[in-house]
Image (cartoon, rainbow, N blue to C red; front, side, top):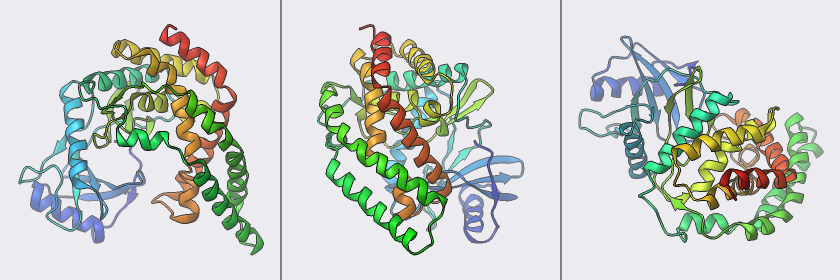
Length: 353
């Protein structure tokens, strides 16, 4: 697990987690620390007499049955030889403990580091693992009219414009009242740029094939959910609940991850390395999904205001990280949009068409 920690007291949430670990898992906690990672859950590392465990605490309102299904997917991948973390059931055999108001799952600690700018060997390892995951879940398909896919394709361009204008109005008021900070300037600039980009969305959507593969995926496959020990992939983490979605989404999101596209170097070569390894691990992947994965990744970036929207409307757990993520994602969208022809050419070559 990523070794990025801040101290957490033994009272408060840390104390409540320690009590559950003792009463429901037979683990005596020596120290517990909160990890500054994640947005949907609050995460901890607990040292239990030398045994390290990772604790994921779910906020009120979380769909716990869906999270149990996600944990089951992670277990299937682990059984198939894909590296990952082992979930620890509580004394009743439940993978999510609800004996206290603080619902949580507990996992064996996996050593490794999160690497956001991957080496060629790490890209190949990540592509291989994703290919194996997609091949493993290929017998869990869904019709192309799956609700999540239909909703994703129905991008509300006018609604995005309204939200952008709302955020720009908030920034303008901060400027007027003299409380604007440097991020307000960056946010204003990027939101104006994004508003101009919205006109490209309908054409990109119209060009997207209608016969893309829809199946169960990892659902959140990206460098932040991968652990590496050197060039070796030591764990794939944080599978999402099994709602069928576009295979090209998982592939494109990883192949054209914003940090890869924006942090220098030849990001097209990086994408080719990852996708090539993916195809070797999943040779049955349809060519149409490979060809479309760059456009799916671009559309996902263009339709998302993740980060900047939270900043002004509902700050996340680690909002500074979300601020940076918005800026990186916006730069990636601009780059992919300007290099669309080159990306299409690369993907057609990889698909053999």
